[in-house]
Image 1 (cartoon, rainbow, N blue to C red):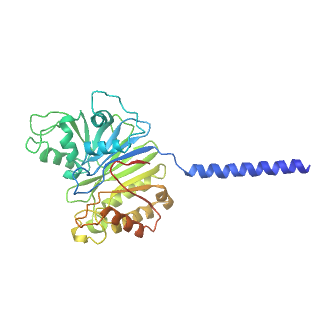
Image 2: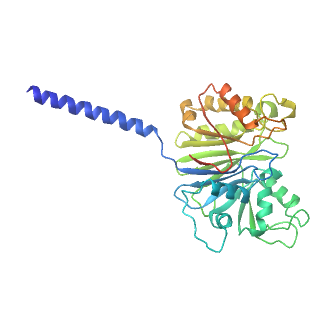
Length: 337
């Protein structure tokens, strides 16, 4: 009888231990998105300007999130093996970077028309292939009038001054409406952001998983338009049934930069304050702790020996009362979300 009881107790302990172990495993979410950083800087380095590639890990097509740098970023990412998880189309006649540009980028999500977010697309357009450009109507209008006008650049779009070369189909995105990104499994909803020109937040969804990419934006408290709050409210509602995987957002300047000279940008203080506003809207604030916050668009310091990105990173941690997982975007890096 003793041996039977002993065996039963051991079996019970084993089952309980397995259950606890399985529960711990369940908290480690398998990634569903891949993010490749083509450019992380907010200015000062023309070969490293705001641009990311995002894909569903089961797909071989990315969508570009802004395009300040394209070929330079792709080449740097190839050197750092950032595309190691991608089943690359073996187009032998093309260089590796052009192969990825043509065969593995399905389209562009452009947040606004400032050059540090679109210069790479303009420069590479003669070598690119046909694909859509998704943006708010005001952003597409700015791209057509300022660049694809046969003065600043040939008109590679399907609108504007004749002749239209029709390489890029300009797709106007309505606010807060789910739109499919062609040739991918992704869907996108857009929100307006406060900046000297209208900027955009892209909420990207794949079935039950969701993330958000912010173009340039100023803090709500200074801008007085509550545009970031509208993004947070949408996310807070969505995460009741979906997994929030990542937030890509800027912090252009360190905290000592005067508010009156931010011109529609964030600092570590303002960024963490905005994230605290999101946390307050969530039914379960712990959701944010399992969400990767990728910080980008840090403007290079003009002072000798000062690493602006390191300063911003340090200040973010000083303000990090929520215990958030901050990741500084770095050109050529691959981030799984």
